[in-house]
Structure formats: structure tokens, C-alpha cells
Image (cartoon, helix red, strand yellow):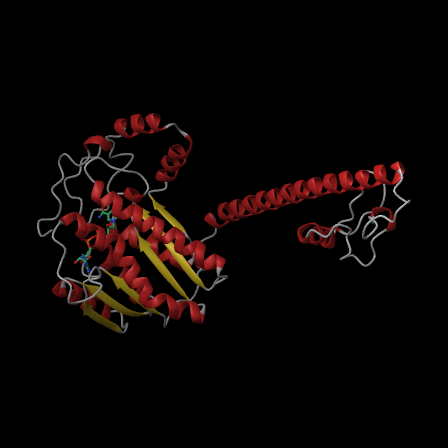
Length: 351
Ligand SMILES: NC(=O)c1ccc[n+]([C@@H]2O[C@H](COP(=O)([O-])OP(=O)(O)OC[C@H]3O[C@@H](n4cnc5c(N)ncnc54)[C@H](O)[C@@H]3O)[C@@H](O)[C@H]2O)c1
């Protein structure tokens, strides 16, 4: 609560009801029971004979004062809101810096006995994540379109004693009777972007009602920065990034603080998916080790970390992209070899 001082030096009503009076268009602050007399404008028409020039001056003075107070109050409110926002930004910034130095084991949540669904579990990062979560005594459900790969992951995961269920699922197929899309572009969009909707739609309502759960979106650094020759892949990953970000904001707005999200944006990973890609400065930015990526993802889940960009150097690129002019970003990307990265792309033989 604030007490504002009017320009006439009179004590004006408390801010809360004062604003409600202003909003309600109440001409004389009648919402206020303890309004102080000098600020009240007489109700109803001025009785005949009473309208002196002094009264008129006084009335217009009150109106001006009220307008001035209204402007001041809005200004104060805006400044206050800005300061609070700034305070929160600084607080969360410091918190992130502090947490970066705290070992995961200190702050890790207990996920043993939890059910973890891994899509694309038949190979690569999906397989490694399944094995990591199985070693944390989670019940693991494996989805992949590739049955044999998925079964192999299940066999490996069971070795750690975890309960494992594996299903052959095409995550892009919203309705099983639909035919596969004709073009690879549509296919890429369906697997990398649209599939998030179908999977999350199936599980989120239950998570929200229990205020418990964690959704991990494996996007890519190609979902933050475009790459020559990867327009379809980048579009689909930008879609996944936008999806995750909006989902996180929605959950925050709903106050569902028990449902967590983690957005993962890795650079190239040596799983074979991007075999043959040319990297100009391998000593600076080389394909990541899949084991390293999966362990970082599990760490991020245990810490309820919202964003994981790998390697960390890419945070610098993202910051540069944020404030440098577009042409400067192009020059840097070109220098880093991004323009010719896909020239020698082979991919995985079975892809
Ligand atoms: N490998 C990289 O360089 C790299 C870089 C950044 C991001 N990523 C992302 O990380 C994720 C995992 O990549 P990876 O290298 O482990 O890939 P991967 O090809 O080794 O594994 C992908 C798995 O998904 C399965 N899959 C494909 N389409 C499916 C569908 N419609 N329904 C169900 N399962 C399906 C495949 O059978 C395969 O087992 C992908 O989203 C990829 O885009 C990869």
C-alpha cells in the first residue's frame, strides 16, 4: 500500500482504492470510505447561486490534480514493475551461475521408480538415454520405428535390472491408418516437429493433473541457427524449439511447477546421422561424443535444467546472434565453415 501526496499537499486516498476508483470512472472517489475532504468533488449539480468562479477554479484544479495523480500513479506502477522484473532477472541469472558450479549429485532429484518414455530408442542418443535411465532404476518404455534396434536397446537396458517395455511406434503417425507422407521434407517435419504434439498431447494432461512429470525435447543447434543445405531439418528443429518454449511458458502460467521441461540443442553428434559433415575448426567445434551428450541430458533432467546447449561454446554464438547485425552473423558462420558443412555429407548408410 502506498500513500500518495497530491500536488496540493492534501492527503489523497490510498493507492489501491484510488486506482479502482479511476478504473471504475468514479468521479469523486466514492469507493473510498475514508477519503479526505479536500479531494472530494461535490456530488450532483452545483446548487444554483453557489457556482462562483472560485468554485469553478477549484473544481478544475481538482480535475487536473486527479489527472496528474493518475499519470504519476501509472508511472510509479510501471517503474515498480520494471524494477521487480529486473530484480527477478538478476536473481535467476545469479542462481544459474551459482547452480552451474554445484555438482549434480547435490541437487539431483530422485527419479528411481519413475516411468521414462524414450522416443527413437532404437539407436544413437535415444538408446544411450534409455540405458542411462535404466541404470537410475527407472521403468523404461522404448518407442522406435525400427523394431530390431529397439529390441536390442531393450536387451541392453534389462541388463541393469530395469523394467523395460518396447514398442514399435512411428511417432510421426498420428493415426495409424494414414499413409506415410510423400516427400522427405514433410517426413522430416512430421518426425522432428509435429510428433512432439502427438506425444505430448498423449501424456501432458495426466502430468498436469498430477502436477508431476518431465518432458525432454531433443532439438538441435540447427533449431537455433540456420545451416546451408539443411532447410528442412532446421525448420523442423526450429519448430521443436518453439514448441518447447511455448509449452514451458504455458506450464509456468498454469503454475504447474511440478511439470518440468528440458530443451536440448546439441551440435553434431557422432552417431552417424551427420556422417561426412565437414567441420572447419575441429579443435574448436568437433562432433560430440554420444555418451557425453546422453549423460549431459540425464544430468539436465536431474537438475530440472530448462535449456541445454552443447557444447557450451554455442551459448556464445547464440548471444552473438542476438545482438550482432544479420550480415555479421553470416560472415562469422561462413568463417566457421557453416556454408560448406553439408558439401561432403554422407549420412548413415541405412538412412
Ligand atoms: N546426430 C547428430 O549430429 C544430432 C545433432 C543434433 C541433434 N540431433 C537430434 O538428436 C536426436 C537423436 O539423434 P541420433 O543421432 O541419436 O539419431 P539416430 O538416427 O541414431 O536415432 C534416431 C532413432 O529414431 C528412430 N526413429 C526415426 N523416425 C522415427 C519415427 N517416425 N518413429 C519412431 N522412431 C523413429 C530411428 O529408428 C532411430 O532409432 C534426433 O532428434 C536428432 O535430430 C542429432
